Length: 170
Image (cartoon, rainbow, N blue to C red; front, side, top):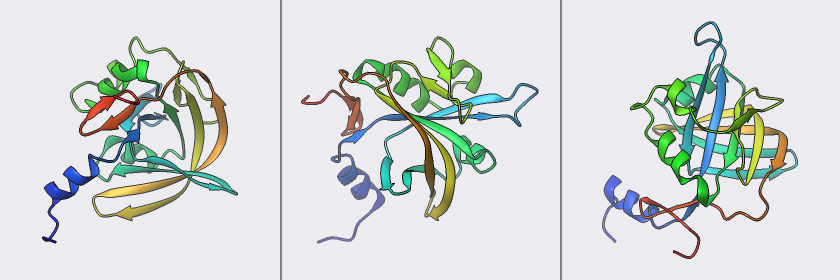
């Protein structure tokens, strides 16, 4: 087997279907009223039932990682296939200001985190960072689940496979 390269690894990982989430936080230190930040993530997973823990992998140099390094509470909205436009918008991070990212998106504030939670998402969890683990060019953020809410039990999840958002079975 040949030695692995970053391109080979990306190609192999693109064949692993993943659910799509929107990770959000409210950054109270950014301006007088603070600012909402968000990013699309496919590296989100449950870790433990006792205690309730989840994990999200963030690029070490990302705005979200910077915010979560000082803001302990955040939310993850599990997106449905009808919310592809939201995933696409937040994946364009850096090309759109944080204030415009949330424009025209229906959300409510999480009671524990104050973070935006996408209305109509399949489910949402609010978390408090329990541990941060540096891992190469990423940081693994392990969050203790503070609340869980299921929104749309009938919806289908948005998935990411081979570099594109997909519907199950397509």
